[in-house]
Length: 334
Image: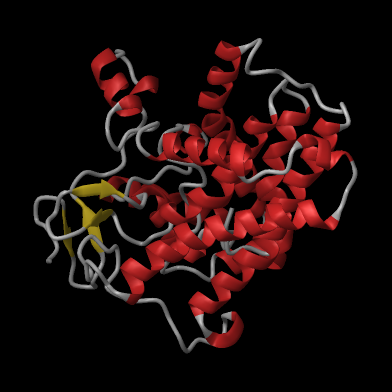
C-alpha cells in the first residue's frame, strides 16, 4: 500500500498532506447550502456518522450493562467505583490499544496516509520510561482513567442523592435525544477554551507540556496528560450539574472525552485495509496543532479558531498567518 496521489502527497521531508485541506463547517458559511450542510453533519465521515453516533451507542451500552445501579451509588464504596474504573480502562485499552496494534505494531497499512514517516520513539529521555508509547499508556490509564472515573462516580453519587437536576427519558424523550446530539458540540466548545487556557505559559510549563511531548502522535497520545490538565479537560461534566440531564448524558460526555482522542491522534488520515477505501481517522486540523503548537486549539467542526485568529488549514496562506501571529506572540505558546 502506498501514498495516494488522489488523497494527498508527501514532500521531501516526509510530511504527508491531504489533498483536501480542512474547511470551515458549511453551517457557518454564507450563503447557506442545505445539501452541503446535511452531508457534512449526517453523511458518512460526517460530524455525527459514524464516530459520534458510535460513542453515543457505546455510552448507552455502558450505562445499561456496565454501570452500577443508582441504588448502589447512594454511598461511596470502593467496589462500585472500581467497577467504573475497570470499564473505562478496558474501553480505552480496546480502542487506543487496538488502533496502536494495527497501525504501529502490525503496521497494517505501512505509512500510507501517515502524516509523517517517523514512527513513535523508543529511546528518548524526555518520555517517562524513555519510551513514547509506555509514557502515553501510563498517563492515560493512571491519571486519565482515574480522574475520568472520579468525575463519573461523583456525578452518579449526586444523581442518586437527588443533588442534580434529573430528567427522565420516559417523560422527556425528545429533549433527551436533542441533548445527546448537543453533547459533542458542548464538549468541543469547552475543549477549545480549556485548551487555550492550557497554553497559558505558566500552565503550559507545569502541565500541558506533557501532552505536547507528542509532536509525532499515536493513539495513546490522546489522553496522555498531566493530572492538572486532566482535571481541566474532564471538567466539562460539570455542565450536567446545571443542565437538567440523565446520568446517560453525563456518561456520554465523559466517555466521549475519554475515548475519542485515541482516534483524533492516530497520526494517520485514513484507516484502510487492502485498498484505499476506508474511513477518515485522524484530523489533519489537530495534527497541525501538535506540529506547530500555536494554531487549531479546537476542532474543525466549530469555527472558534477562525473567529479568534488561531486557524490554520495547512495552506501557504494559513502558514503565513500562523508565522505572523507567532511573531506577535513572541515565544509564547498560546
